[in-house]
Image 1: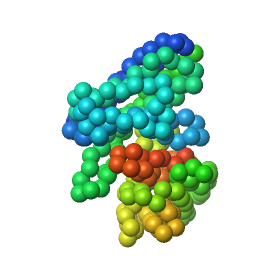
Image 2: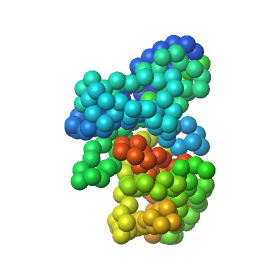
Image 3: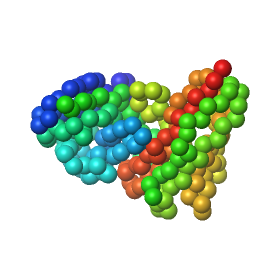
Image 4: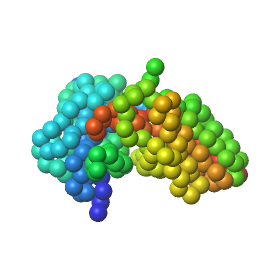
Length: 115
Length: 109
């Protein structure tokens, strides 16, 4: 069981470039989320998905796109990178049981620098 | 006002000390509450869920006061390995979670 995996671990982009951060989970979890973490800001939710084919915006969605074609994968696309998107990006998955929302399992993160 | 607020920290305590972290949240409809631990440059990991009746896991005790919209975490007999940032997490709705900014703890020998 690999849990939640993210690639790449590190990435440097130039302003205006696009790229996709990959996230996969092998726990058959319904829910997946993308967060960004900046110093002193805590984790902020970018987009989340409650199942294949269903996505929704979080707190800071601008400049990012997501899709969820399978239960396992939840890629995050940066459309035109900006220096303000320099951050650490975490993907997480979780499940619901008995009406309660359970713990989120996080991937190791992607450290992105936009020059 | 932020949706989830925590003690600003950092907390520097000697080994063996008892330390308490506080967290307040603004959304009265929140249903799920957690404490996560995050080590430097690592991903957050669940420390414990927080239940209305309060719950304990070894040296860790979590309390929830829905009326005051307040969550606490108590660590007894602190160990060097407890040094980390502690994150208070509350669900806004469904799978939409809000993280507090975190409180950093350093346990000193």
